[in-house]
Image (cartoon, rainbow, N blue to C red; front, side, top):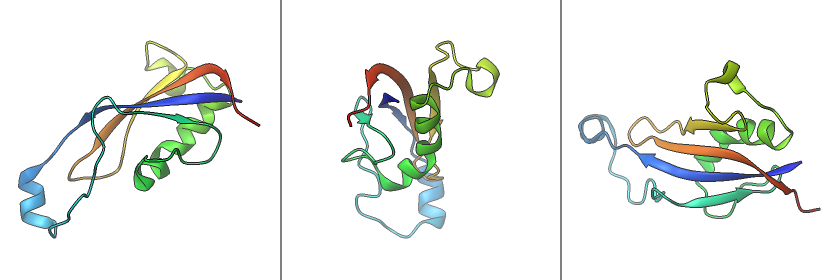
Length: 105
């Protein structure tokens, strides 16, 4: 099983929706563009948002186990995926990339 690199690519923020529908929350999302995490199996990488991990983990595991061409080749690099978390107010886009490094036992 391969390790998978998770890189924060972009964080959107829909202020109008937050003002209209969301209760004020401090530190709702501390992800920053450029942050990188390494998934080593099914365990959520330290510092990665738990809610984001719930969305990303099935794709991480597929890539870790050698899956390629997810969704019939929508990515230029067939060993990668661009996945967003499910936060409707501040969605974060993550690039997932299978590495050549094997999982630590």
